Every structure is written in C-alpha cells, then in structure tokens.
Length: 431
Image 1 (tube, rainbow, N blue to C red):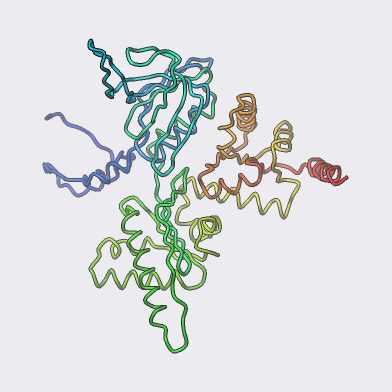
Image 2 (spheres, one colour):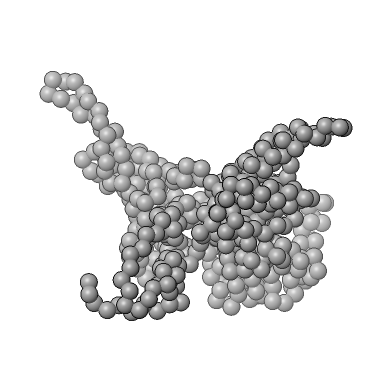
C-alpha cells in the first residue's frame, strides 16, 4: 500500500481486461473498477499446487482443476495403478453404549490405488475406484472407495514413473494462454448443434431437434412458423451458452441458405429488442458452408480457409491443418504419408518422420508396456527434429484420426518400401 508499482503493457496480463482498464486511466488517477465474475472465472486455468518429481520420474503432483477442460486433462493424467489423494465424503456407522447404531457422513482425505476410471463429460466429474492405501480413523487399509475429483477441489497424483507426455500435459493444463475462444452453431432445417471448441475438446452445449411442417401448396404459414420457432431456439441457445467476452469467432454453418436466413432473423430480432450482446458482436459471426447440421460436419467447417484465417492462433486450427495436409499427401504422394503403429515406428527408426499425428487415446491404454512404446516413439520423433501433434479424442479432428488407428506420420522423404510392405500385407490377407 503506497509503494510504487510498474506495469508494462503487452506482457500478457492474466486478465486482458486489466490492460484495457489501465490504458483508460489518467496520470495520477486513483480509480476503482468492477469486473463481472464471468470474465475472471473463464480465464482461470488448472492451478499447480506442488510438483515433486525426481530425476528418475517418480514423484507427486498436486493440482486444482478450475474448469471443464481441466477435468479432461485430469482424466488423461490419471492411469490405473496411480495413487490419488483427495478430499471425499464417507458414510460412517457408530455404535452407542446401548447397542444402537447411528450413521453419519464425514469429510476425510483418502489415498487410493486406482483400479477403475470413469469420466462423466456431462456432469464434469471424474470418478476413481480403488482400494485405500493409507489407513485413517474412518477407512481401513484395503477397503474399496470411489473418489470424485471435481472442479475447485485439490487432488494429488503419485506415479512410479512420470513420462514426458504426462509432464507436458501438466504444463499445458496450467498454461494460461490456452483458451476456449471459438464457438459454432451447425444447422440444417429442424436440427442444430451449438458447440464450444477449446484447445482440447469440442463440447456440445445444446442440441436442438424440432419438427418443421412441410410447405403445402397455397399454404406456407405453418412452415414459416416452424422455422421461426427453430431460429428462436438457436438464438436463445447462442445467448445462453456463448460468452462473447471470451469468444473470438462464432461460426454459423449449414447446407444451403439456412445459415443466412438464421443470421437475418437473429439481427432483425436483436434490432427489435435492442439486444446489445448480438448487435455489438455482429462482426464475430462467420457464415460457412457445411454438409449437414450434425457434429461431424465440424471437420470440413474448421478446414475452410475463411475459418482458418480467423482462428489461426488456436491449437484446434493447427490440428485440423495438419490432418488436412496428411490427407492431401496421402492422395498425391502416398510414399510420404503413412498410418498405423508398425509403419510409423519403421519411419521413425529411419529418422524420416517430419510430423507425427497421434491421438491422446493411445496414452490411456491399460497396457503400461504399450503406453511406454508410444511415449518412446514421441520422444524419438522429437529427438530427430520432428514435430509432434497430440490430438484430443474429444475433438472432431481427433475422432477422425482415431479412425486411422490413432497414429499417422508425414515423412521428410519418400519411403516406397513401406508402401510395398502394405501391398504385400494386403495380398497375403487376400490369400
């Protein structure tokens, strides 16, 4: 209090709003500002409480997840056999001196050896089942318990071996530069999906499915009323689920002219009701063609050049571009594009991999030896100067990569011998 403090603009403030506020202040001005809690809450990232990992990779990391994406990171960090500690509620039965028993709930901290992992994407809760390994006054050692890892609650993970992929994910989860800054409303007549596209997830916030009456000769009023109800539902969904203070771009995509008709309707309604949210953010809406109103159409939408130029600084755009380049190379120069673990490993051994595309789903396999092989493959590609892109299986591009075995590679130079090997393999299968 009273001590001078130097703030340098352009140094990535934790909240961008502070930089805007400071620029509006006059010299020697003392000011008080109120910032809506949504601006602060949505800028929070996973909090790293402590990290104690020795040179052999053994150790403990304590974290506090702050949002939905943090929960996804936690799901990818925890493996079967890990020791996880967190606060939980346990039902305890006590017997009185008279022989009557009473049950009540107590909050206690347990450490379990994880045997089963379940991630509920809707409730955003990570459930871990396993045996208690540290006895306390309420739970005996060896007793089964289910821990619920939730937002804003500290948990700790102890691993016998923290590999490079896990440590890199901890760094990514705690990086404040990672933001959910793209939204999309994909639609066709009667069907719409409102999605948030983050660095690691495509989250469907709302699904709209309404029956729109067909046009009848001489009577189109029922059809037009149905469309009006449909467009109103989409508009309300956008207002309810999209935070325009954070989102840089809102993609409206559809086959035909549905997106254009909806945009006209939304602007008309915003003018009538003087809806400042829509009117002030009109420039953020981008109209793009899509083949349908279903989630899988996001792949082609995100590959559109107009969309790429608007979201060029996001991780999602980088993944989509890499996958697009892979498909083009596979078609035009197949000796430089391969997928499948066997072929990618051989290309890596020859230090031929320029870009490795790999799904995070492969790192969640229960076979520890197999996970280790994938980790070593990633490290070998990086050591040889290659680029590694880890795709989220909850992202539309990750879903597509999973259809190609979850692993693919673009090569620095052609390896036709791998192509011949593929053909020999298919011939032997036919025999």
